[in-house]
Amino acid sequence: MNAPWLAFWDGSHAIYVNARHRDVHYRLIAKQIAALAPSRDARVLDYGCGEALHAEIVAAAARELLLCDGAPRVRGSIAARFAKNPKIHALAPSEVEHLPDRSLDLVVLHSVAQYLAVDELTRLLGLFRRLLKDSGTLLVSDVVPPDVAASTDALALLRFGATNRFFAAAVVGLARTVLSDYWRLRSRYGLTRYSEAAMTEKLAGAGFSAERAPHNLGHNQARLAFIARPR
Picture 1 (spheres, rainbow, N blue to C red):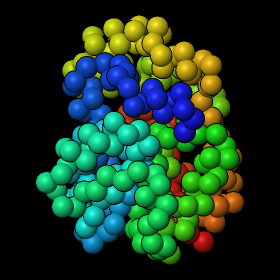
Picture 2: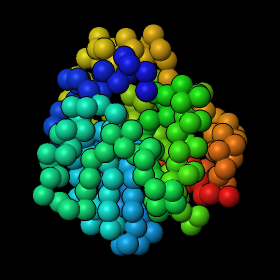
Picture 3: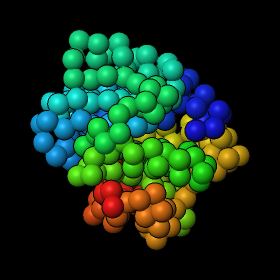
Picture 4: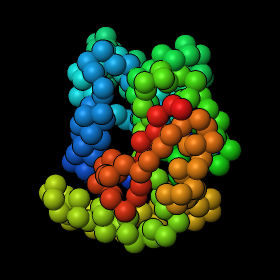
């Protein structure tokens, strides 16, 4: 992830409009990842995990959960939050690179691809191909298609807020976002977008057999998710 985006995610930001939004977001993601764990003996890597507030839900469905985030402050917070859970370990990206080959059963890359340059994602997929067991699974989710506008994301958030009792805060938060560092970064650097065909081809080039998943992780179903397995 380029330095401005990494600094944004490592700093104080208002992507989550209030504490309830933050809580229900991470709880939903954790439940969905837990449902993908192939067995209670699985080793799972959540790469670019963010704050991972409810990672204990995933850990309960697996033998070990590795949480990786490139933002040092976020990573330190994760390590402190789950220090007493022997199943959960916080890793830096450089530590992930030194994991043994064929040692992971599930790798999740959620809401990360859009912040990476094309060649950065290529290298990351190559790393995941090396780390996954032959029977393992890679999930790449929250991929932004070329034709999805910011207004679509905004409507998805409002629906999520209405369902989870933070609609008014979502309205205020969206207005605040227009004046935020996030919007300035998005306007300057854009988001890296992939069509279904482009992401399937990219995964194939990294040694995976891939298909679009029926549902995206999280609340925004205008974005795409892909299930990939080593070939």
